[in-house]
Length: 526
View 1: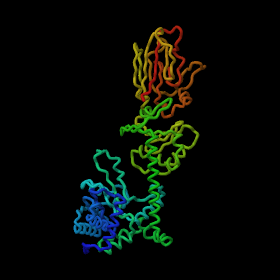
View 2: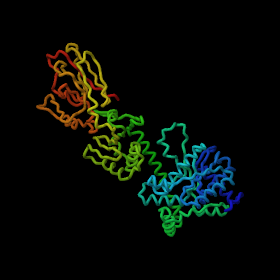
View 3: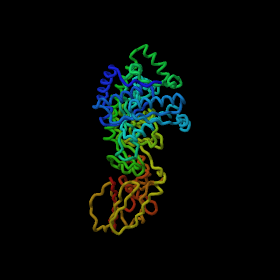
View 4: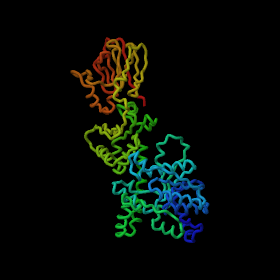
């Protein structure tokens, strides 16, 4: 195969001038940056390589360095060998450095139980990222064109994609896999750019013929085994019979949806950052603060490894489109494994939040996580693995004190204060709902601070008999997820003396003849 000619036509110069202006308008890369070109050997990528070589004459837009990268996937034997040789030869004639990787995509697909195309794509993008890191490039240029865009939109439409999927490919996209990296913040951000996205495939082939740019024909593009090929060979011609501008129309729809989708994503993110309480113990993240009469987010953090809390009243004010996006943002934040978040899961949770009754419920949402409604709050929670051991691990014993003191209650993110005093020295100040006074001499010491146990009951002053602590929690609207960590004060016999913030028992009441008083006060650590 002969090499491409060194000199280009006047038409090419005009085309290049217009292309340079368009690329500047799209702000695909910054002047002085380096770009890695993904060149397969097909007409689109070979045209892109020639374009970047020619852009060296346009100082106002030319990248600092351009590196050609080619991946030999190991699928088509001699045909793939010839493609690699063509890319290297043309790059050398253009004065561009070229690097080639040979990978065994068929074996990788078998090992990872992936389809062949997905395996090849994963290996290819991994190599491109490695080349970008090696050469200090912030951009990887891909040669997708308008026909590719239309096919992508149709494929996603058939799979039931939403607005984000139907917006197709963008001119420039940041590598979203870098957000999970634990590397330092000094690492540069990698972007994928598509400088040919507006061009039709037929126009690319015509330009290659006009400028005698050599390219290879990939025989696999003729196989109807792949959905993309069937769409290109069978469906698109039918659509173009109905509308000769079908490709342009589909691309225009994608452009419109992308702008709408981007705006809605910005709105959802702004709402998420302003109204969602979130924490992740593993990542050391805790943002904002939410509290109510009985509990605060600090208590949830003792029981759940990660979570998000939203006021239901605020959530219901959102448009349905933002509700769905918000749920997706929350699940993306909480999921440890980057599984696709399907529409059915999002909609199942969203519809549940809309029901007025029951006021408390729980539903599993995968990966060990749960979504709850607890009265006025919506919660998405990821429990600690040790959650079932909580009761056995946390019981605090309080011996009869001689002076004031306190103890931190780790399972409730609160502090219990006490002071013991003579009746003669005590004040008559009113006690709050998180305060209690006892006749210290009438108590069965030591006292215990623990969580609720099955069958717990408390005798309440003014009532004839006792009441289940569980029923007291329901009456006080204590969220179900927090009942297992709510502190209860008992005596040495297990008699429930006090449920802070809810009720005090009729045990050890302060009487006229009381000599020594014990004051207890629960302080949330917010």
